[in-house]
Figure 1: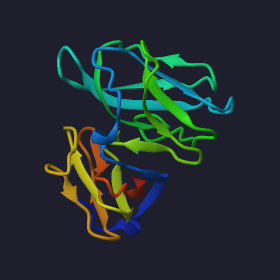
Figure 2 (figure 1 turned 90 degrees about the vertical axis):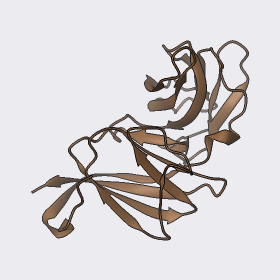
Figure 3 (figure 1 turned 45 degrees about the vertical axis):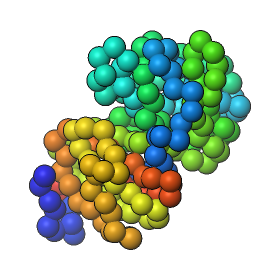
Length: 195
């Protein structure tokens, strides 16, 4: 990891506003070889949504971005999800962020059993991940217990633990991930570009 030393000579490129992370062990009704459907109780939820999880056959960590269509269910292309680790209202680059207008629900495609939800005005739940290779990233801890890792799914055991109010600076070379435990951490990210 390469660390920034003179942030005053960097220019903010964009900011990911406050988002929530939570332990995905709390998610119920995992797909276990099924596709996932996403819908909202508000017709105004029509932005992008990125899902993080594993493929049942290979065990590989993967993500997929879909476009919401309000109250109509959207089905993932992936039809062999095993466990869903988290979901984020935006794209994998941390852009096109649109907080939920209503309650956004992820459910199993076959049985319609709810896996998790994102409530109104929130942008994420569970593990979140971003691809910002080459960007200078500052992760700002706001509340709760927050953990960071890159290149692999983050857990409380393998993640870098944030101290209260800590700002962690990194220039990622691959996907990086954030998670919390039952404390449901909140944080935000600043992406910098060189002047």
